[in-house]
Amino acid sequence: MAEEIVNRVAQSKLQVFDLEDYYPVGERTVLDIKDWLWEELILKEKEFRSLADTHDWEQYKDAYVALNCSTDAIVPGWAYMLLVSKLQPYAKQVVVGTLEDLETSLYQSILANLDVSPFQDKPVIIKGCSHKPVPQNAYLQAMLKIQPVAKSVMYGEACSAVPLYKKK
Image 1 (cartoon, rainbow, N blue to C red):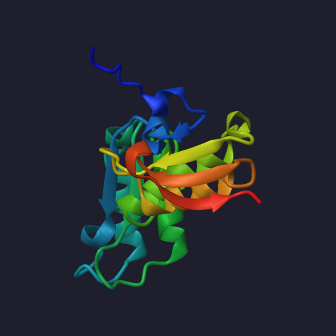
Image 2 (cartoon, rainbow, N blue to C red):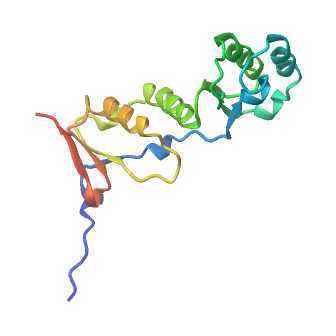
């Protein structure tokens, strides 16, 4: 008679925390303002304001937007603030930076408001593999949020977890 295969992971008290479960749905886009600058380097206020006034902002409806300038131009702070004022009625969130900066900001907001009480005094594994663009900083933020309540924290998959913390 063959022995029954027992899934010990499913029977354990191990809690899996998967950051992909918290990935906010929505389009991500970068608005690179280099083309809005004279010779891609110098911001001329009148022309910049004119471009901002005539730009199609509705295309960012319900999107997450990263504002940046991919050249070495010095962009004054008010320029990004002006663009945010135009994006505000449409975009879900706006950051200055890269798409990774945007993802980090999204996860920072999500994790700041996350109820971690289900992980109280339990062994937790922060799942390591993801198919969505979960930024490295999100894993660090998850560790900071979960460690104070968990009995232990590991990283990876249940079959090959790396221990990170164990409450003394």
